[in-house]
Length: 343
Image (cartoon, rainbow, N blue to C red; front, side, top):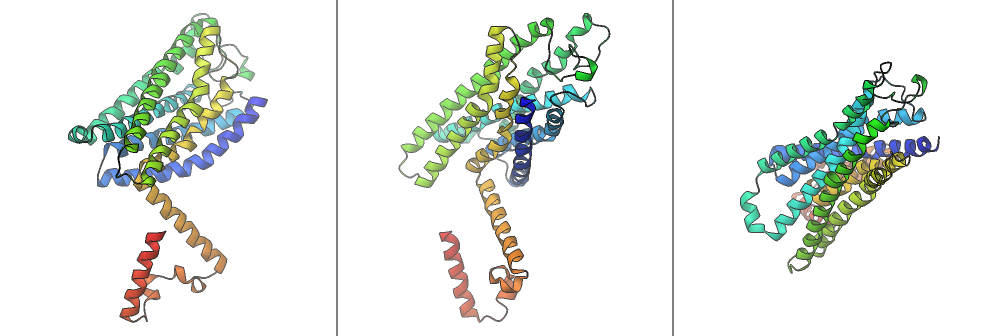
């Protein structure tokens, strides 16, 4: 089946890239929040948790794609995996919007915002985002059982139309189910996509405009701000746009579009693109990535040399300076600092 052949490679690629990247970001934000919590770090930590939940349930979607979109897993996993899969997609839009609002307020109203810039407000906002996202996606549990009034021989959430050997998870719907589902999907498009996207666009456009007018901002910071804005808007447009567009088309045509599954390809990539937002938003993540890359280079040197003795750059500081006179040691240290500053 063409859909499964397209979905499976994307699922695997997203899992292999997104899981380590988000685990690295999660550990970084946990340390930073534990040491000195800031609103932006709390929002990014919750965004990372949302991505990790998404990636945790992605293997169930892989199994579904391997079986040509036929659900062969236990029935209770169908609504659970669908609920987690779709709810984390929409909670991500809220947290991305929260990051854009925090950035905009910080540059547009620096003095006023510093008075109210408290971690507890970010915690309250995060709880609100989780609540709204999960409540709206509870329709995943409700709709599959609407057929039970007219059918007494089917009690699983994924067998509304198909035969038991061809059960599909949250895919085939009766007209009774669609009469409830399609308006809810339109509401998801408006509330969980359009409004956050408009807010995010407004915040980042003004964020860049204000930064461009500040004379003391370095070119590197300007480019980083532009990268943050473009990366976030790209996530909204590329990842969430096609899937949410299917909500509108389906509502107008009064049917569940067949190409919705293909639209999920771009939505799945969200877990890979969010680390780009982390990189431009947090100095801690940039530092963690730099340290990770440096460690990988050092390990590569060890593998190539076979032993640390032939790689002077990997010799421990104690062993390196054991027989070095104090003046030369001081000179070398200063040179190392200058080199690190250039790099």
